[in-house]
Image 1 (cartoon, rainbow, N blue to C red):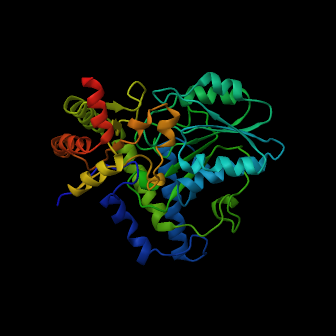
Image 2 (image 1 turned 135 degrees about the vertical axis):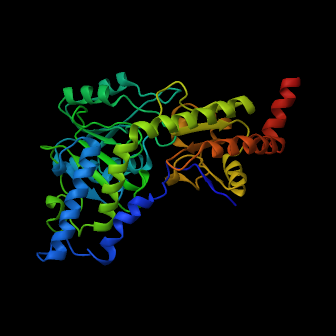
Length: 392
């Protein structure tokens, strides 16, 4: 059975060029970058080259790049590192639609005595900037706002947000895991202090991430150990994965403009096709600026998990939202924050396209999805009740 993989916001297939670049660092150049001998020196050189490539993708300085194990570690290191570095301040601002890597830290921080403000979004998932301005105080240690939402693809106005936050002299962190590699991220122009990214979202392996720390930003180390990463993150460097991330960053930078346009064309074709063929569908964040690869839909009166299983039977891989909350029977906290009705939120499906998707795959989804939705609605008591009310 052919697999049509449209869950690239959850993870991406590792690019064969990335694999090829990594292989020698398992069996040939396997040295510890901290070792003085020639094998260690070669590994150290490879790490430095990868750091350069990631810095170029972000238009940052190489010494501002800290390698971590994943985006979640980067988010945790940023938030807890800033709070620990400024213990006199006890207030944090974030949003109601963050990824669990940030959002699930809120109860923990409240338990530790911090005040946390969760910013509102509107029906399209757009941020309330007036709420942001009103929330900032002299006690605010950090503002952490995602670059683009992992479920809806809605892009936040980071430049405006950064100007508001920096005008108050407050440290600003953004979770850019879904943005990097999909849209331009230029840190020479965007005044964020800390940025999180993840390798496996840009066709590098799982298990490698980056925390960008702008020069001069006060951050306590999250992992204490050796001198690696200039004392900002202890632990022997994961050389093959760092090399792979460097190659993935290089490819992303080269392909970004062309690939972004191609994916938006595929996404728009999929979106228009669904809206033409299937009634009672909501496109989440349709009125907002969105990532070019992401389409989040709510199919009213359909159980999203059932829809995903039937799609999977045909080899079509999509998601009900964040992969990090799959398995939960509760509707997505992102859709609830947007005010999406429960009857629709339960039927949410996210299609996220990537480098290896084709137009033929979009056509395959459009050929099969309408029939599946119709079958599920036929057995839905809510759909039947709605039909009776309409006749009524």
